[in-house]
Structures are given as C-alpha cells and as structure tokens.
Image 1 (spheres, rainbow, N blue to C red):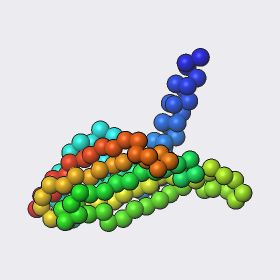
Image 2: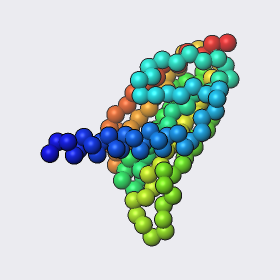
Image 3: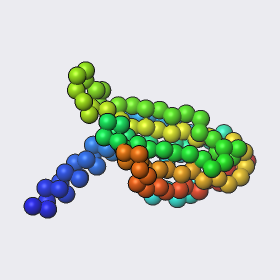
Image 4: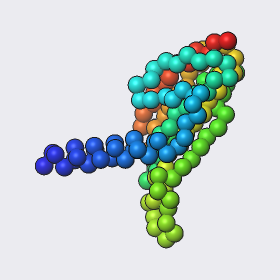
Length: 132
C-alpha cells in the first residue's frame, strides 16, 4: 500500500523537473536550486529561482532580497504548466521565476518563502556575495 504514494510522489517530481525546463534560463544566469546556500556573483550578473505555484489551491511563493542596493529583484516571470481550459477549475498550476541582479559590491540574503492558503509553510535563505 505504501508503494502507491511513493510512485505518485516520484511521478510528481518528474513532472515538476520537466516543467521547470520550460522557462528558459539565460546562459549568463546562475540558478538557485534546492541545495543552494551561498552564491557569489559579479555586478551585473543575474541569479534566478523557479518554483511551482497553484493559485486556486492556495500554493504561492515569495522571493525577496533583504538589501536591494546589493542584489535587486528585476523581473518575475509566470508560465502555466498546462494552459487552463475555459470552464475548468484548478488548471492554474504554473512555474514562477524570480530574477535578481547584482547591483553593487556587498553581502545580501535572498529569502524564498512557501505559502499555503495565506499561511507561511516554510522559508529558506540563500546568502549572496556580490563582487566587483
């Protein structure tokens, strides 16, 4: 009986990984992954984080910099995993990509928050060192 939930989880992970590739990453951009704890980048270099959101279910993400004079959120992209069909509900699962740029030398922190129905579920930080 426990094999079915495990298979379901593995299938969801495969779909999520394949869908993440749909949002094009620029070749000069560093990508924040699950295990990323620290990043070094140059002024003008970009870093991105992509996560799954599902508005009708209440699953949201939020990413922010604690010092936008060092690393600034410059863009936020949204792409449906599968385009919602008219008259159907719940088809709004998507990938949301946050793009930050190194602005000036210094240290800053990017915070990634996972929200569920208005409640903060989890949070993690990535330390960023911007060098000239």
